Image (cartoon, rainbow, N blue to C red; front, top):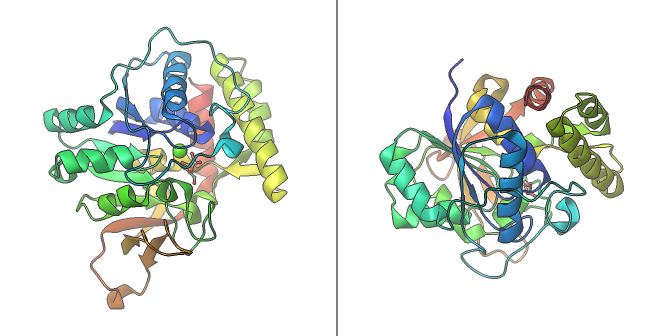
Amino acid sequence: MSRPRMILDCDPGVDDAMAIITAARWADLVGITTVAGNVELEHTTANACRIRELLGLDVEIHAGASGPLVGAQEFAHEVHGATGLGDLVLPEPNRSADSNNAVEWLVETTRSEEGIYLVPVGPLTNVALALRADPDLARRVASITLMGGSAQGVGNVTPVAEFNVYADPEAADEVFRSGAPLAMLGLNLTHQVRMGSMHGRECATFGTPVGDAMAQLLEFYAVFHLAEEQIEDGPVHDPCAVLAVTHPHLFTTEARSVHVEVDGTHTRGMTVVDERGLRADGPANCGVAYEADADSLVDLVMQAVREA
Ligand code: BDR
Ligand code: CA
């Protein structure tokens, strides 16, 4: 099976770590860029480096934006822990980030190779800055397949805003207006794909460092979701964006016109998805994922852990 060439732009982050593990198994990873989001940039970058070492991956990691285009940084320490990987403590990595120029690297890498899939699973700051530096990037990538936003008005930071878009709405707005082929894996989709302690216990039986790490990530995640929602499992958001590229047949997607609300008093950071079909206000700019074969997606994540 040929693996799609992929750049993962992330803010690890418990489910970002799962996305790196998933991408390492199912994609041909060209590189990883990091952005501030769930936790501070220094931690998201260090965590990406730790996961790289855990997986024995030989890909470059480039650190990017330490805050949004406008305003103050939003974090999600309560979901991901103080430094981003919950209770998981991984050894200090031998190799640090390859540069602090994620934006430049994104521009250069997509210039030297067209047709790479860009998969952002954190705030869209790096991607927006790369598009500002070179708007033609929108044409050179196979797609920008992002975890963020939501159809059907489901939010997790506010009633209607999802974290990655809420953390940098101006950046998201620029990405959605860029003309790039876009796919959106929003909360309406990722809430269907859930993992918890049961999967964690299975990972622990693999008897490998990656299995043990995944078990700890899932346990931390499960405890948070049990306290927050009285549900034993949590949505594994970020692996969905990776798998939408590597296994698109497992998703049902509709072409929609999507705009990002940057002003609203109660709706800043909302993705407004026009579901009126022919009556939509504008042409479709995004493939919005609505349904997924959740069991198969979870199996693919588990297989990635088992085989790492
Ligand atoms: C998104 O926000 C972050 O907390 C997760 O890593 C995911 O990318 C979900 O809203
Ligand atoms: Ca993330």
